[in-house]
Length: 411
Image 1 (cartoon, helix red, strand yellow):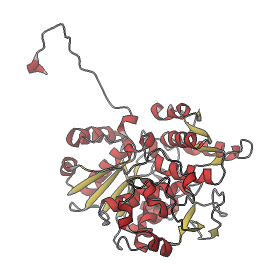
Image 2 (spheres, one colour):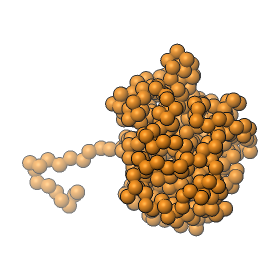
Image 3 (cartoon, one colour):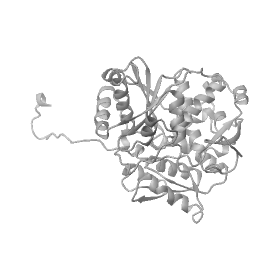
Image 4 (tube, one colour):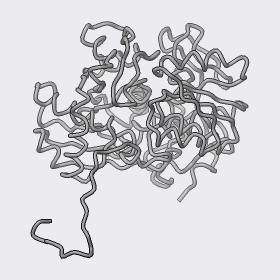
C-alpha cells in the first residue's frame, strides 16, 4: 500500500481568502489573520484537483489523513510531519440510539488519533506548513488537548513549542506538554484571557501563533474529518452531525470539505444538518443562533466543567453561524450535570468510552429528538473528540479479601 507521507503529489492551492470579505491573500507565505483581522481560508483549483485524483485512487493508499494529499496545502512530502494519523472508526451505538428514540447513532471516535484527540488533525497539517514555511517557534493558548498535540508535532518537526493553558485544565492533557519537550504554563484565567499573552509575545519571543483560527491550516487538518466521514459513509453524507463547539474549527472545516467534495462531483448537493453543541453556562453560539445574529457576543464569565467547550468567544463565530444557517442546522446547549451520566450509559450499553464533549453531543441528540428538532428516522453522527481515558471518571473500588471466603452470591 502506498505511503502517503513519502509519495510526492500534485498540490492545488491557489490562494488564501478572508473568511469575511473574500479578499485574496498570497499563498505560500506566513499569515495569521487576514488584513481585516479575520480567519483565512485556503482555496484550491478544484477543477484541476478533480482531474488529478479519483475515489478509486484513494483505495490504493494507506488509510490515514494524508491519503487526501490533493485536498491539503503541504507542497512537498519532505515537510509532512506525521505521527500516524490513521482514519478513525465510525462506531454504531444501537442501544444508545434506542434509549433516546433515535433510528441510528454512529460515533466518530477521534480519540484513536495521536495524543488521543482530534487536535492531532489540525496540528499535523499546521505544523507541517510551519515547517514548510520556515517557522522555528510556535505558541498557542489551549484548554489542554490542542497544547499536547502541538507539543508532540512540534517535537517531531524540531520546532520549539510554547503553550499557555488555564490552571484548571485537565492535568493528564497538560502533563503531556513538557513530556514532549514543550514549554507549558498554567495561567489564572479562561482561554480567552490567555490569547493576549501569545499575541503580545510574538515580537519579543519571536514565535508564530497557532491559536484557533488565527492561522489558516488547522482548518485544513480538521477538514479531513469531513473527507474521511464522507468516504466511510460511501459518499452519502449522514442526515445530522452533532459537534462539540468551542472554537469551532472542525465544524467550519467539515463544511468546507463537503463543499469541495460536491464541487468535484464526489458527493451530491445533500448535506448534513450541522449542530453546534455547547454548555448552558458557556453558550455564545447558541445565544447568537437563537437571536438570529451573524456574530456572537462574548459570554461573560463563561465557566463549564467541559474543557473543550469552555470558550466564551471565538474569532470564527460568524463562520460557525453561517454553517448552521446554510445547513439548516441549529445550536443547542446542555447542562453540565447531564454529561457524566451520559458517559456512563453509553459505556454500559455500547462499550464506547466518550470524553465529556462527546457525551455532551449524545445528550444534545437526546434533547433534540425529544423536542422534535431531529426526526427519529434520521441518521445521526456524533463526534467524540478525544479518548475518554484522558478524563477522570467516578470510581470507587470494590474490594475482596483473598484470605476470606468469597460470597459469590453477593457479587
